[in-house]
Image (cartoon, rainbow, N blue to C red; front, top):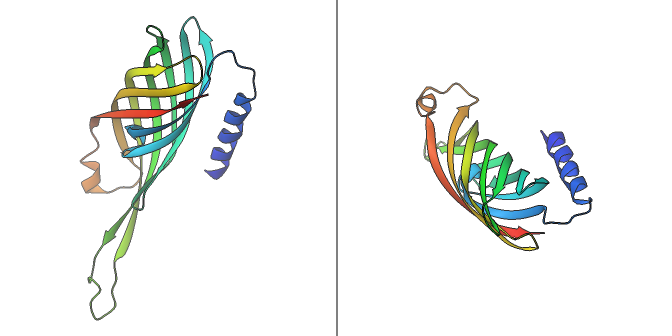
Length: 176
């Protein structure tokens, strides 16, 4: 997993070395979305074909109980006026969740909490509005998501909750 992330980082950094005649890079904070609570993302726009573009992104999310690494996505971006775009795409997130089981509640036997680690993935579709200047500046988007969580472990009570779910996100960052 670490080797894949390292390879993707070098590929994305290599793309930034090319000459640019329009903004190709976005770094942004996303509330909701592919990282559940939040995510920090780097996006690279690959091509500019007649007012449309394709972007790839890589991100992460971390908290004490839940982390998501990697968050990978691809988007199709279509111009809809000056600095306005329609955005649609696919993403994949891999989550690691740590939960406590307070068996014994620290009683006289010294039984502290047990920790249970679960792993699952999220695959989703997104569509929404993006505001981005063709020069350096502020970037933001509002997206609607449909996602499905996929458990990598056989847990009966978790398997009952694996339907397709709606979700919204708001992202804010900088373009360079």
